[in-house]
Length: 269
Image 1: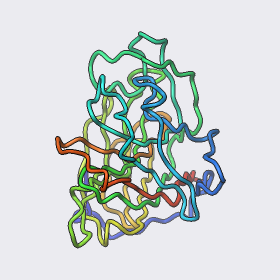
Image 2: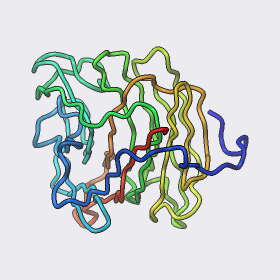
Image 3: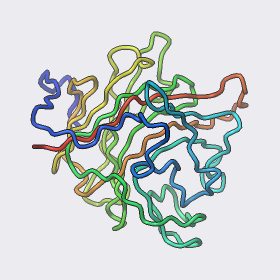
Image 4: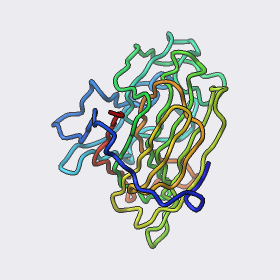
């Protein structure tokens, strides 16, 4: 990954792109033709994988409440998550076939029909969000392969911000890059870059995803570029995690919240 100090000072140029999806979460209800409001539901049960969220004038608020159950205690301990994803599939209950098998010996607990709701394939992907400052929070937008073929499993991450990495003055570091998972054509290439400004304000995170490369921008400023990229359609994973740290969960600290004003996809004209 080449980082900003070694890159030319460059701003994102959208003039060659045509906007094809402009999701502002403006309706009274979530657009379920585009979003599945569950997190990797094949490895859990509907009551545990369901997202908690609200729609309002500023867009989407992802929320984790004190009474929210761990999403998959069988496989992932006390992790809690509110997630919207744009695709899903699995094999039958009892099989090991499902998206994003994040550890060995996973077994499908709730079978998922094949749903290809919004799967970009190259182009410009962007999100405007405000991260949660809670020290156990992780706010992220990442894209993963639909995994109809198991090796089509790479990840392209626009943004991940850990609440524990947000300092009292608002400065923070932003994770971005590529994880191969089961894709032999990719290598792990993931970095953290400094965020200019207050992480608790709204910021725009963008990736120009091209065949064989990817360029990452924060607030329209080029911060990193990679010489590889997934070569197949990817689904979006937009989420707020609560990462367990062994401390009691104090009801006074909830809800944890992260805001998303919009998510966009543009394609080259």
